[in-house]
Image (cartoon, rainbow, N blue to C red; front, side, top):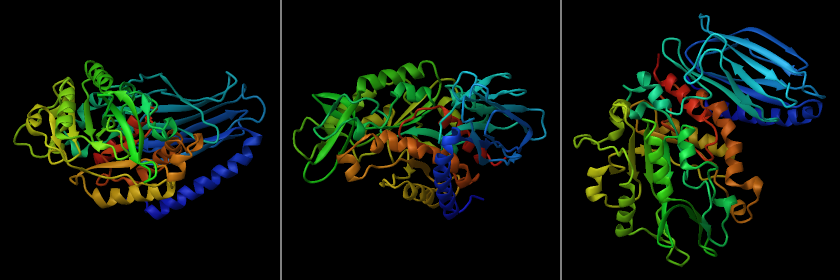
Length: 467
């Protein structure tokens, strides 16, 4: 059973307090955490642990199945060049072992995992997986899967869905977990209004193509018209005085080209949601929504996508189809879902659907307060997703700038910084809020920057199998 949300909030406060304490300790040696995410049904048992030169190298004697544990690590206060550590864990009752290693020989702190007598998808036995290091922060080691299937860890294969098809293929889409990208087309600023810039409009640092390579499979796309051309956009009404403000990101042409380049090599399922479509060439404070002609123009562009998924006519809810129905034939599938209330018409037979055919729930928290966002999202998870057959659910792990942060934006308040601050809590807390009955379908974030999010999704996928 998951911990209560209240207990999780208390844990959050403790983590914040611990972080403050370690900032004082930092003067003695650079400290931080390694987050151990056991997304397997097996206990990890500490077989050996040793260190040299490290001020702290503390590891739990065991990590229970589907649990997350933090290990505090602190390097020496002088040079880290001679610092080293090794902690070896055994998986279940098997001979499978991995070793967590600290290595300061280059003069910079670095953590890595050596797969001593085991392998994970994309990482053969003997591989060393770099984890990096974040002083006064955290890095993750994630292991999902089981001894009877395949393991997925950090550095998963680019085609992680296809690689796990033996496990996930028979599961209906409503029982599959995947990473998602909020305002996915806003990795660049190609144009902006007077009061907007990257600080308050850029939501991603990686292009659509790179987000795909990092494992994201559910994309929030917001088509807008600028100078008669289609772009992805991020616009919002920030008050009656200055009205709608925002920016354009990647062009429609670029987005489609990058998706097609990815699906040419990777037989993965990709879901694109379309909303917030504005005609920014209407030069007034209100910004007009797309009319039907403009939507049809956008739909025509999306017809340029390869591998558009054509659902059988008798399937009223596409999310009930098994993953094999989308990619089981070794070919990619792209599902386009329009969220705005607009007529799809003949495009439905060509691979564009409305919410009636692809229903999902979940909504953003609309707050700049981390604690409130976390409480709101886990409350919605429990409310809307009490069982696996509940509607497809999007966990929106996003912080929304308040008016002051938007108007007077600086680096510490940027959307990217706020996302970077929020993501460690997702890794620390998600498994504690999930069971094999209650779990999200989309881990929806700003700034998709690491394939760790795909490994985390597979940890929840493994839990969801109830084995």
